[in-house]
Amino acid sequence: MTTAELVEQIHKKKSFLCVGLDVDLERIPTYLLSEEDPIFSFNKAIIDATHKFCVAYKPNIAFYEANGLEGWKALEKTVNYIHKEYPEIFTIADAKRGDIGNTSRMYAKTFLKDLGFDSITVAPYMGKDSVEPFLEFQNRHTILLALTSNEGAFDFQTQKVGDKELYKKVLETSKTWKNSENLMYVVGATKAEFLADIRKIIPNSFLLVPGVGAQGGKLEDVCKYGMTKDVGLLVNSSRKIIYASESSNFAEIAGAKAEVLQKQMAEELKQL
Ligand SMILES: O=c1ccn([C@@H]2O[C@H](COP(=O)(O)O)[C@@H](O)[C@H]2O)c(=O)[nH]1
Image (tube, protein in one colour):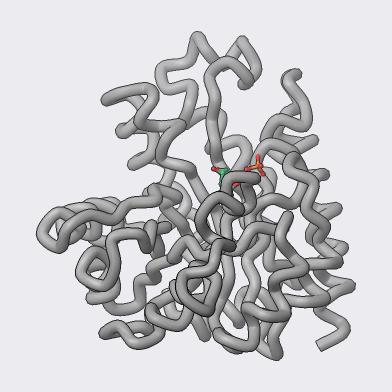
């Protein structure tokens, strides 16, 4: 999907919500566990109930890998289902990969070609040659970790390297890489106050913003400091939506939670 198509969808749905599909078998309704593929059954119900209110889905790959081969099969079925039934929706493999060039090339092939995700999260730590193999894919997006939502972000990312914080170096340096137009960045909603500075370096890039909901980040703050004229934001919420209810109406309740966020986003979009 191109960025222009993503922006079009955001305006059409009045939403920049990304629903995180972090399926934990210990948290899904127990009656689903007797189904042939409980992970896919859960995802399908969540997707069918929330698709009207969101523009992106983000399965975090850890939750699939943790279930071995069955998990990988469920991941593949989930991304195929989204692309077949709701082709207007942007898909994010939250895999946080990155390695020496020839290894990164394999990660990129797996997620962006074979599984067909529109984007993948990548760690910048190993530098240019670890990220550029992901950037080669046309109309696919590499979402580089810039300033993450967790407390540990202060261990390295906000520390100065020379005269500048590491996360700022990541933003500045990554702009010089080949096919950098295919870059987006992760910035945690819990670090919204950093967004004004971040926008000085990357005024137009799309940001994936996790941390609204369970981690306490505020949508209003993210919009105040991070929104661009083309919106420039995909705000993720996972647990607060998909585990809002553990009973048989879990999907309906997830839909209602997603709608609440969508309505807040529609209000924010009026200010553009
Ligand atoms: O900085 C980051 C990067 C990724 N994540 C991931 O996003 C979701 C957040 O889930 P919630 O349940 O809405 O807290 C999850 O998959 C994280 O691994 C992040 O939180 N922060």
